[in-house]
Image (cartoon, rainbow, N blue to C red):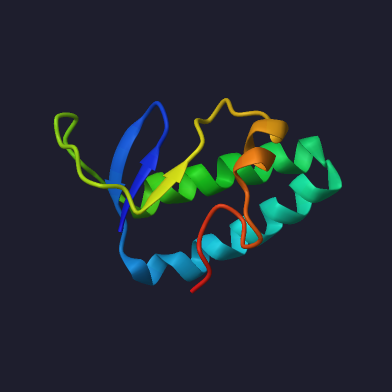
Length: 93
């Protein structure tokens, strides 16, 4: 799956990593719903960090269709809340 982090670029991520990312995504969803700003910030950055760690960066001039688009690192709790669906940011596996 190709994942885009807004403002950073794209990475290729094996589908086998989605379950690991879903754990963080579930935590993030709960923090957004409860309005836990500190927890949100910590978990959101952990999620983006895990995508960067597990993914293989694509070249800057590559433009592949993204299967998943994540907010920019500076996104606020309210901005992320607007992007969430019932499963969070990452589709359930």
